[in-house]
Image 1 (cartoon, helix red, strand yellow):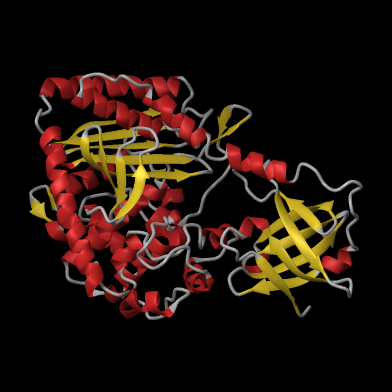
Image 2 (cartoon, rainbow, N blue to C red):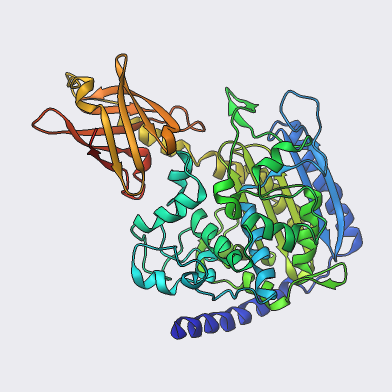
Length: 518
């Protein structure tokens, strides 16, 4: 433990030197009022153009500079095809932009002495376990917010998809084998960070949602911000989620992120988030009043884990505690993106040396508009001009996220054997299957196919169509409705299936379930 901390301190000292050299160049030319005014005018035109071109149905943008909100506007519509406009008070689901917001909440707890970033989870939440005893005993809040616990990135997301609640998901993470050695690898984990936040709140005796409101939302006057879906759906002025259907944006799917609220469940407005950016840029001081100790907040921006290069701008990217830390063409920046594949995109980018920050909220996926507008604005502020189509470049990244996955799945099931091997009678497959992680699955006959039911009280139902032999296909994802997934039964000599492997739950090799007593 002491060696790890010493190494961490050495990394901090090394990066302080890098940051100093980078910021000497970045801060050499202050931002003039004239350049800022011109940049904001062009940012507005770019946002209007993005909406007019159909790049997104709606947008909200806030810009903070020198502790003032210098830009705050909405564009487009809350829901495609309806007249209600997006304004600065439209509430968006901000997806993973929740992570730096939640890191700020934990920094407030650290500031108050409730916890430390190095508090052990075993002390805060003794019921939580990883797969191995040593990491379980040494795991800290810092480890979970830096995504270095060894948990595979998607662990828990699969359980959330089939309807399990937060407590169940966090309990079952103990069954997932690690994807790397403890503290040796970066693996972005929604439910790892969620456990870090929930555990940090435990000494208060209050829920995470209450603590976030008490420590951050209420002190900053963020009256429209919440970590509860119920509060979001009660807002009249809220943005719908949109995906493309036959080339047009459509509000088809809703998203309940309560299980991972600290990692992805915050809903907020451009106006509210501008106040949060003021606090971040003020090193914990808001409206002249110290709210969070500067050191507690600064820990969130220390680069701990390498993420490689920015896929568009090629800047060197690292992860701190709930924040991306990047050294790019305009010097040091802190930021984080958010995305729900069912229809949300968000972004915050902060340039701490220039006391400049921008928040972009969009009600659609896939789109690179938030990054495109942020990068274009940075070029305008620092260089006076934009020499690249940043929206187009980022659109290419986001539009390409699912295409290869869908194509690979389609290719895997493009051909069956010739002739197709017949299925066994439905009774061969029907029954109950289970493992510790997924829980119970129930298979029953339905017409010419089967039905698979998963989750608490069989909350999710999937139609299975015969493919070949003992392999059936289903289409489980609303956001990629044309992506097939295999459901493969193992039939024994007795003519009964003894096990089933569910491909869409097998990312971490936890998708095989054994037959249990009927």
